[in-house]
Image (tube, rainbow, N blue to C red; front, side):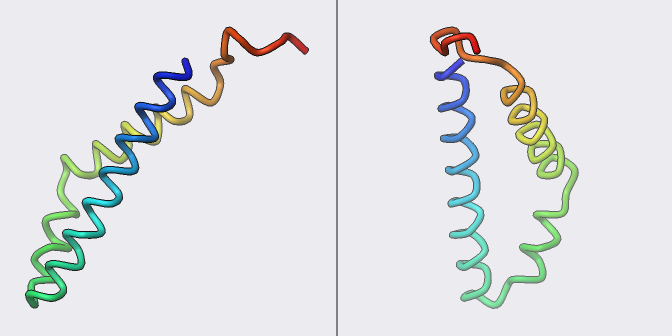
Length: 69
């Protein structure tokens, strides 16, 4: 489960970093309104929902290595 958590954190971090860079580039190019419209599309919202549900699901799964309390 540690690997799944690390992958989820890595994917979320890369997407957030990439989104930030894309937002800044759109702002500098004067294209921020079009960028905001592209980010408000169904695939982007679905990906955000998938990441959120994955994080919630992984929060309920215990690691095998943890001592039982």
